[in-house]
Amino acid sequence: MHKNNMQKSFLKTKYARQLISDYDTIVEDVKKFNTLWDQFWAKDSSVLGDLLTCHLILEFHLTNWLAAANPGVPSLDNARLSFSQKIIFSDNVDKTIQIMVPGFRCINKVRNAFSHNLSVTLDSVNLAPLREIVWPWHKAAGKAQNEGIQLVKDFTLMASGLLYGQLKSIERYGKGDGIVAYHRWLDVAMQSDEN
Image 1: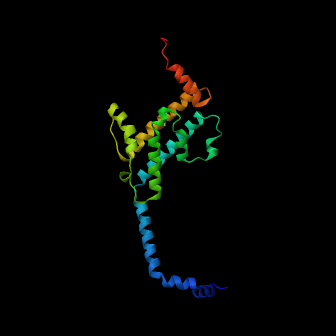
Image 2: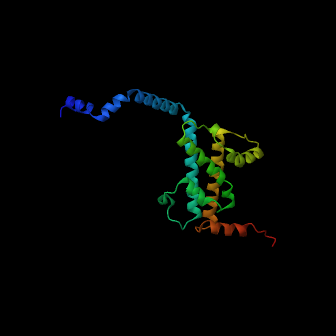
């Protein structure tokens, strides 16, 4: 069918007539879409990029920690667990890591808020769990008690360092048998030589 004939046939359909009838509404919809598009690109992408990077760093270290802590579990990468599922599996396993769990949940909640709502800013989300974990240590060390993306980065550094350090201890002292063996070793190692 020739192009002009196709166009004429299309213009005779109910669909085409409805589009023509709704022209003003469609133009308004396009304007609203363009406004949303512009708002998205006007966001400070450095904050969003840093937030996503922090989330990825935490997930990387949490995944590696879970693998070391649970050597009997087949590859966690193949299990395709979400970050929130990994947080659940890390909770109540080790007292030291458990301190970080509210922060993991907070970072995940913030990342999800950013991905589902274009108007979200770091100022509009609750970072209290990160403050409760980071600020006491920073205060004791005489460091700044940061807010916003710097607080997120501070928590990420603290939690990642803790996960990595404990992962190395699990490997070294758990001798390949995971966190249970590490905790057994730790119980013995914490006993006084005076007994």
